[in-house]
Length: 296
Image (cartoon, rainbow, N blue to C red; front, side):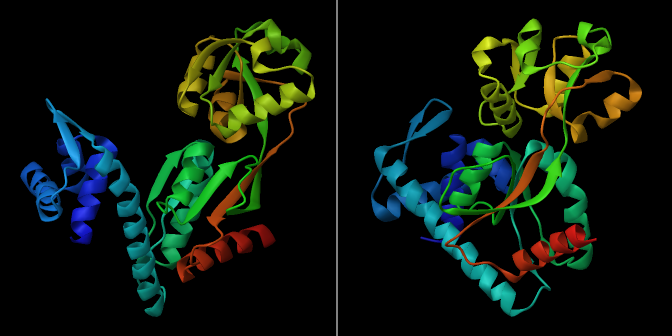
């Protein structure tokens, strides 16, 4: 059994598709299939059931997937330690970030880090608060960034920035000429929301809860999985939404969206890492970059 075989097995298992896994790994389909077949033959166990063009993990495959991920995580940690011994000349620092941070706040900071340390790879996966915390737990990311609070004793969390939030509507919306709105008036219009697990949605739920209300009191017209989709729906007149100023700044400047005054507190951007995992020199260097920015 080799690490390459394990990487191929995990990729196939996560995608439930040999061809897609092969494409993502830059391998041929035959090489990918051969690696899985070699694992199954060497250990006399069936890892996948094949149904037409798709595959599904067997019970044995599901159990082995947990171990395979753990082995790859440990191997990556070992590689990082060796990279540390060579200083910051080479290595890898994997990031996971929720959408607002990953698409707007983090990229210039990654660029600054790469300028200082061009030999360090900085792959980034973008999701929502739930997927980021999962990536940290699974060892798929060394550093995570989320908006809002999380309740997880296994992760450290520190504030690194704040994010101003706005209630936004289209310029033709009745609220566009209102001086202000309160949570008690949120039921007057339709709403466009991010999906469950989103930090933006979490903040709206908090604002409503403090006013004695819930999402059930709102007319939710659409739930969308991306900030840009929410922004486009609001600009099209589908309703109101709570969004980061980072996301809507250009639309506000162009007049496509209108900021409706409301008592919405800023939210915090949090940096996450696993308490029990090795902190590499690359991770320390990235944190130093953020600390320098905050001290200016």
